[in-house]
Amino acid sequence: MSEQVYDLAGKRVWVAGHRGMVGSAIVRRLGDEPIGELITATSAEVDLTRQEPTEAFVARTRPEVVVMAAARVGGIEANRTRQAEFLYENLMIAANVTEAAYRGGVERLVVLGSSCIYPREAPQPMAESSLLTGPLEPTNEGYAIAKIAALELGKMYRRQYGFDAISLMPTNLYGPGDNYDPVSSHVMAALIRKVHEAKVAGAPSVPVWGTGTPRREFLHVDDLADATLLALSTYAGEEHVNVGVGEDISIRELAELICEVIGYEGELEFDPSKPDGMPRKLLDVTRLRGLGWEPRIALRDGIAEAYRWFVEHETVGAG
Image (cartoon, rainbow, N blue to C red):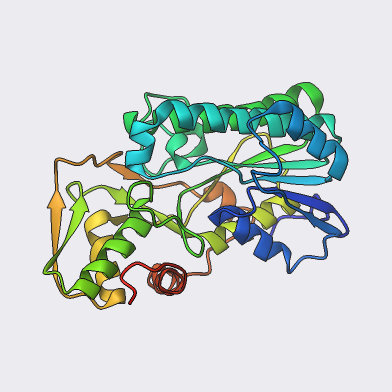
């Protein structure tokens, strides 16, 4: 286990994006820490894509720690068709929060990114050193560029100003609070919804985008929250840190596992006319494990929990 480099006790912590899946998980995790105050604001209260209200908010609330979990996110179709929106909004959020945190005297900033920052053809598993070594996956290029800019911004603020910013790059996330919208959801949530609806309707098959051959790594969002708090307390490096489980699964295998968990016995119908995205996305988590971290939640258990949350909070198929 790495030595502590920062003590959260008594600190005022702002979780930007606290209503999202990632932000809400970090808020839950902070409930176990002796922090001084949790600071939150909705997008209606503070528009993080605008510099002036962001800086005014930080000046007024005076956080000592900022966790930047706010982002415009979505699945492969949303990323593919709304590239300008994803690039602009995420770029503005990162720039405004970083600058406001620096100007406001924040002691530590945690930037949360995405594994889509790595080149489409990056060697697997993808090490942190793979960044900027090749072309990005075209279907999420806008989002990826914004996330690359965010972590590089933190790095440059550290170099030029001595600002204590660290960056974490999570793999594919799932869990309570996920987005189950049929258009903008990520693959895990999309498949849970589709399989649930097929089971409720007694449908003979479930449509699955792509060929089913791409491989993905999945991390429960509560495990990400644990890793974030660990890094916040023990990591002080300039380079970003991958956050994942170090194992992957094909989309076909994932769909089959979701069917098992939900109890659906129909067929899977793959649609190769739909995009697959990157052939594989598996993170090298050597640096993270060097901090003494390991995931707690097995994939099958995490899917079962995510499905329970979906049934409790969504009305799809109800009645």
